[in-house]
Amino acid sequence: MTATGPRTGDPGSGIPTDALPLPLRPPANRVDPRAIWWWRLSAAPVPLVLLVGQGVAWFLLPAVPWHGLLVATVVLTVLWLLVGTLVVPGLRYRLHRWEVTEDAVYTRSGWLVREWRIAPIPRVQTVDTEHGPLQQALRLATVTVTTASARGPVRIAGLDADAAAELARRLTETTGRHSGDAT
Image (cartoon, rainbow, N blue to C red; front, side, top):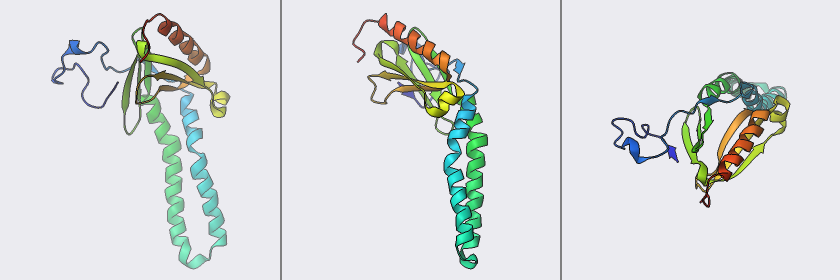
């Protein structure tokens, strides 16, 4: 379940508080602080490759017609690199939240477009952990909770690797206690 408007059950939202058993609320937990470095390092390669290409172009292209345009593209690429590695990861860290209760998995993500998701525990089909090369180097992991939702899986990225393994174990145990067909 996703929401983009006023919180469900809030006064003035038009939806009675007792209409939904799983209220949309801010999840309690932040991701691991090392996720900031993961996001920084993940954002750097594309603008850095562009800067190298622009540097090569600077020396290979004739000086007169292209250098003004090339300087403008270098400035824009440097701004992209600085914003993508210094500003955005900090915003993502402050905004990304997650929480698992006996009833649901709650996530909030996004820095420009925010997404709040609730995956009811009885709807959980699989729980996976993922450790990419950069995540492994930083001892981080992503937990993916697959449900019968058309919106796709709920992902909690940037968790400590040990905490992710414990979360996957706990979620598997919790979903095993609920009867139903997870559809």
